[in-house]
Image 1 (cartoon, rainbow over the protein chains, first blue to last red):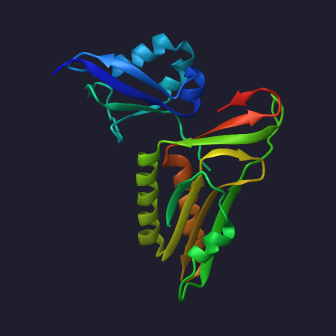
Image 2 (image 1 turned 90 degrees about the horizontal axis):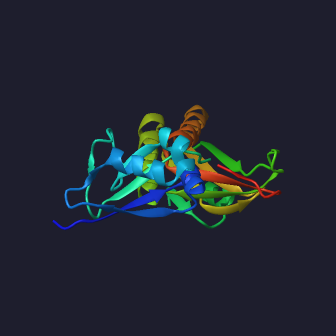
Length: 86
Length: 134
C-alpha cells in the first residue's frame, strides 16, 4: 500500500489553539500509531498541548480506547476536547 | 424531527407542536439561551457552536432512544443549534412528552444533561472586546 494521508479534524478549543479546522498528516504505507500523530500535533502546535491532554480521540467516527491504534492512509482522526454543548 | 443539528433558529413553539400526542398529559421543555456573561475580555456578545456532525447525531439518537425506554417518553425533541448565535438566541431545546408530569420532567432533565456531557458539540465565546475563549 502506498504512503498517504490522514485527515486530522480539530474542534472547539483545539481549533482555537491551532488556528485551523483540520490538518493533513502524511503517514507511511503501514500507518502511524495515534499517539505518534498526537505527539506530532503537540510539536507542531505548542498551544494545543493542554487541550490534547484533556481530549478524547475518534478514528473514522469511533472513539479510540487506546492511542496505540494505527491510523492508516485515508483515515479521519478527530480531536475531541471536553464537550461544551447546551 | 426528533433530533436535529441545525444552523437555523430554534423555536419552542415548533418543539411544542412536535411534542403533541393523544394522552400525553405531561410535557416538559428545556430551552437554553446565550447569556451575556461578563469576563476580562468584555461581556459575551455571541457564541459560536460547532459539532462533529456524524458522531453527534449518532449520540443524540442514542440519548433519545434511552429517554423513550427509561422514562416512557412518547415524544422527544433534542435540538441543538450550530454556527454563530447572538446573546438571547436559543442554543438548545430538550423536550419530552409523557403520560404524566414526573416522567416528563425526568426525561427532559436526562436529555439535556446527557447532551451536555456526551455529545461532541463545542462553543467558543465571542466577547465585545476582542477576546475569544472556548
